[in-house]
Length: 192
Image 1 (spheres, rainbow, N blue to C red):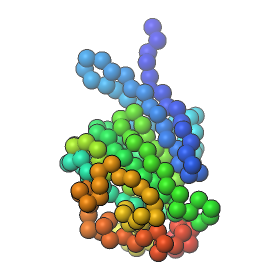
Image 2 (tube, one colour; image 1 turned 180 degrees about the horizontal axis):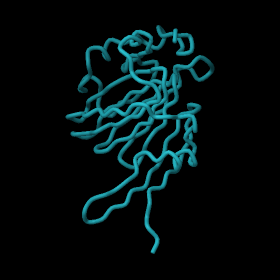
Image 3 (tube, one colour; image 1 turned 60 degrees about the horizontal axis):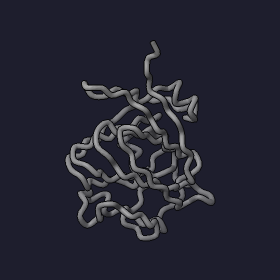
Image 4 (tube, rainbow, N blue to C red; image 1 turned 90 degrees about the vertical axis):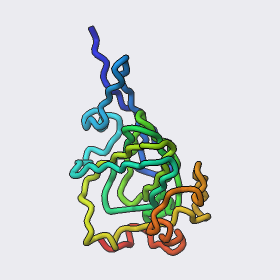
């Protein structure tokens, strides 16, 4: 008898290195089971072999409309959702011809994203009680916070069409006050 297992397939995006993974799950009357991160299967599907997880974090979001971002740090991320759905907008902040390019993706339990260093992450919850989980290959550091790059979620130059208008969203004051893209140096020019 064959046993069903989780399968990962990749979709490439317009931002080089930004990968979207479709993930199967097995469901029955008890609920569902899924491998959220399976290194060998993900590498076979296209995840960079050099990605070594050192920290995993969970963001619990109480209500639909919670919006976070744009944040770019000096590490790669593997992003998924355990419960709920999120609209994600990714912004390439690396120096070069793709600087300022935006890709949007909706993530639910059957989708994950690999985000390369220098691409800013943002998301908006589409359901109450959303659990957003991400693994990184470098530790977050309060001492390096000022070296991270941030862009304003509402910058009209980005053209992001948020499902829940930002004036109705739950956003931190810090995220509301980030600089516009025009005032941000490319990520590769930021001191490491």
